[in-house]
Length: 385
Ligand code: ATP
Ligand code: MG
Image (tube, rainbow, N blue to C red; front, side, top):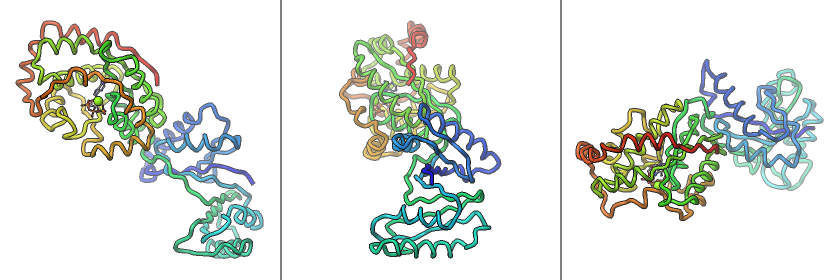
């Protein structure tokens, strides 16, 4: 009897001819996630199986696998040879101490002498006889003893299924550039886009000395937390101070936020193109703040040609908070360090900006802005998270 971890994938089931492409990505990501641990991965009996690991690392392996996009669920199982006595002994041993149960049998090996219904009845009887505190309930059991008789003479037996992250394997849907601030929303946006298989780089705009080293560290910490799901993230840190000061000097203050956001997008787009990112990703949600009215989003969007993906666009703040709690970014996001937008905000920012008026204000920047943008791009700091 060997203890193994059985893995099941989700939406990849729906793929047709190119299923192998998705499976290869998934297997590669599983191996990358388990890097540094001893284990064996096999594609055995039409199942993904993790075996030969040290028992004390089982929880660590499970926690890492739960964050692999593309996996639907996993089970810790006992693997035995397909022999009625061995299967019975294992099924009895795995049953809980009390409660209602049923046995579910999947018989891929058609040479096994009993069919699946007969096997389930037989094992159910044996389990009942072993413990007077158990009863059978086919419809509302407290636990299910699953018996998976494979074609190759081996059987897996397990009771529990542990939910994984679902989604699609990271890397199967191109690459995008996440605009990552220290807030609650953008890490969640990164998580959601990477859940659809997009590989992400990130960009953070800071404004030293108006924003602190600690605020930057917070963004690095957030990128590392998102990377637990998304895989390694290349974080570009852009020094935005001179651009912000220049806009502050030259443009109407109620338009500062929108003009700053347009320059952030413009720079993000240039970085994206350099690194083969096919779109930008933000944590914007309609109506959340003045810069996120439909008018503001339209004016911001007008500076770039790449698509801008906004996975949270229709989410309420509480829905976003719930996801950030689930993925472990919330505690970091609420640390109280200023990010660069909050320092240069006007008391009454425009909520219905008009593109040609904003462009007119931006003409005040013509003298120096191209050089400042170039300088910002040339001095990007890259941090691997
Ligand atoms: P968040 O919680 O993600 O900070 P927010 O509600 O504070 O979002 P804004 O500050 O208007 O909203 O920012 C909207 C989006 O713009 C963010 O979700 C993020 O994608 C991007 N963004 C804002 N500030 C920065 C920054 N300093 N660096 C990189 N991206 C940023
Ligand atoms: Mg923010």
